[in-house]
Image 1 (cartoon, helix red, strand yellow):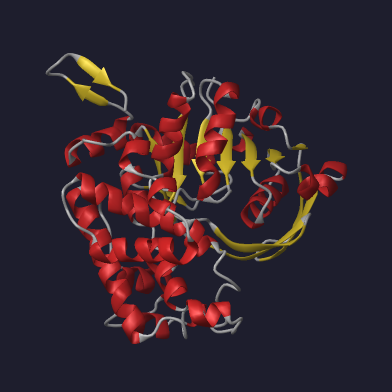
Image 2 (cartoon, one colour):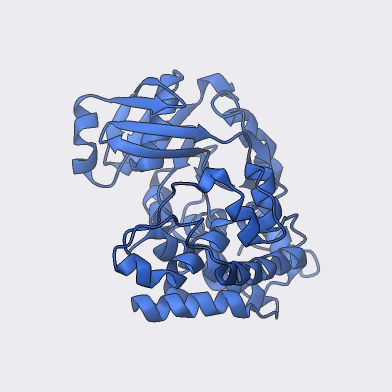
Length: 377
């Protein structure tokens, strides 16, 4: 029996900024919502009183049906599982959920960063999950929001449109239809390579953070975009963006430049990234991270830049600007993001040519008709 969008049961995974906002909104809209968080301490107040106060662009109290630190309890009977955690948790969450999933359930990453849906899809199979599960990812998070307490969140704004794609791509329209009662803003992308390679956080987050590290470590408060992105740093972002688009073109992905994205998203125009950012009033007042232990490095380097670089190397092209930022992050943090990040090996794409990568992103497998075999990467 096919559910109607208004009857969808949701599980929201993660009680951080995005998770509280999303769970609260879905509860406010009257949906059945289960909220999961790994640490019970963070959600203790919600276990006792499962209500989230929303302020800002959306106001009201969202009531939850379940609040738990038990992943099995959270996903049981849920139609759509909304993942709102950082990308650093995607692989582990997939492993945890794998034994408890049922046929027909849908996992949506909000957002997937670069190749998040592919990572979760591959991990489920590695973990022995043979259920018919659809894995989807949003290009970006639908809200600008922050938690204002353990049971409250402020939604500053709601995006007018967010691209979404599923594996297999033939189910994208169905996923969007099921989500439509809650989120009519979701629009279809061709496949998860399109949502992945239009991840602009890869361009705007790691490089400005690393190149302003002196100011950040001194505790100097400055406007991250308007002051932190100077003409020379802007030139570096242009090079990063050009390499991202080159990888996208080889994979037949429809993409746009970061300059064009700034214009379409914010009406900010300029002949360069630097000029467009300086003409963007939406960035006014947005301050830099307080230290280098920020998701702009620990999430966006391994889960945004590394997969782009790995895809490029797999196709025989170089990404010197992207690789420079990854190496700089490694040297400055003492981490090895090449090892911890998403690579073609971890995504099941190693050795595939561009047409095969596209086929896998759209179907979830490679149909090798010549050998009569079906290869699930």
